[in-house]
Image (cartoon, rainbow, N blue to C red; front, side, top):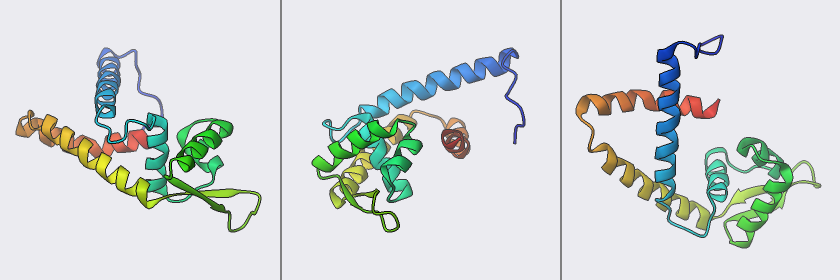
Length: 149
């Protein structure tokens, strides 16, 4: 594990960080266009994805995971509830709090969204040669770790 930040004054590292940022941003923008439900914002989709990955959570926990302020998450959860994509239930230990869970409708929509995005990305990746694809496969766990930091 790196104990210090990579030295960005090194031209190679600075170039690699710049290329990574640029590529991730472009791919992210293009993936966002492969949506199943255009009525949901990217933030709402992200919250549903977090619930799918992490399970039920309080609005405060979701706010921390999504890096938004709690009042913003309260509004997002209310919109998702109004669309039938999440349920609010009593917290098992603290009756002052609510727990957010996704509905079957949300699960089905997320599955269809993943299928569509995966198919698009697989089609895009078909333009890579075997060596390039092997490098992408090897980099995927590292990129996942970077996304979680």
